[in-house]
Amino acid sequence: MIIAGIYSFNKGKEYAEKKYPRLLKEIQKVINSINAADHLIKESKEKTMPGQMLYSPVSLNKAFKKEFDKYDWHHLRVKCDYPTKYYVQEYSPNPLNKGQFREMDFIKEKLGVEVQFGKYAFMVYNVSAKMTIFKNLGHIDAGVEIVPVKQFADNMSTGVSYFEQFVWDLEHRGVSDIDIPVLIYGIDSR
Image 1: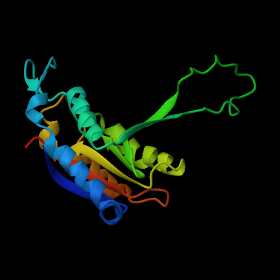
Image 2: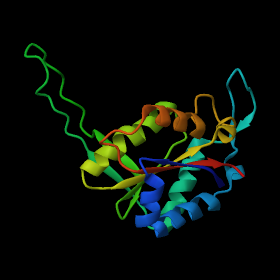
Image 3: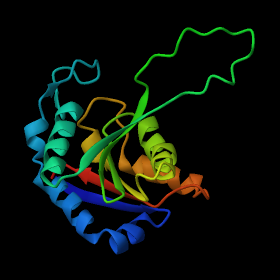
Image 4: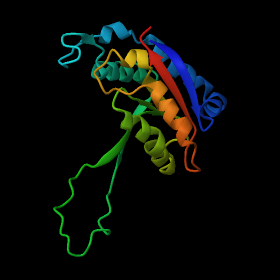
């Protein structure tokens, strides 16, 4: 795979290049080591493209995990203790499910990485909420988001978001004082 687009949110590119140049090279090696054709294995059952072979996000995510593991990046899961003190007095909830958590795909030396081949809301959540939460918890100080460019997403199931859409929204949203530096890579199959 290749890096087809680079977007610096809140000076994420500049921050990562200065503080994590070695880790950025590892991330680039991971991306370049994945042969997208190996993941063109999902037969579409969608009405708009029946029988068409598509890239499998599940298979791609497994490939990214395998490659990041080679460089000793680790997955982090943080337990969530949800507050109950905001319920109104008359409300009596069932006990909250145990095992509630938030997680980050890969972390190394306080640089967090998320690989996202899902719906648009997940991309926005990763950069606008999750990465800030993990910074506030002391796990990261910057992030890298890896997402498909439109040309690549067009060969996945419908609804997969893409780099160009994500960048447009972030540019029009602007940067908040709580946002952390995030480097966004748009990737393609070739």
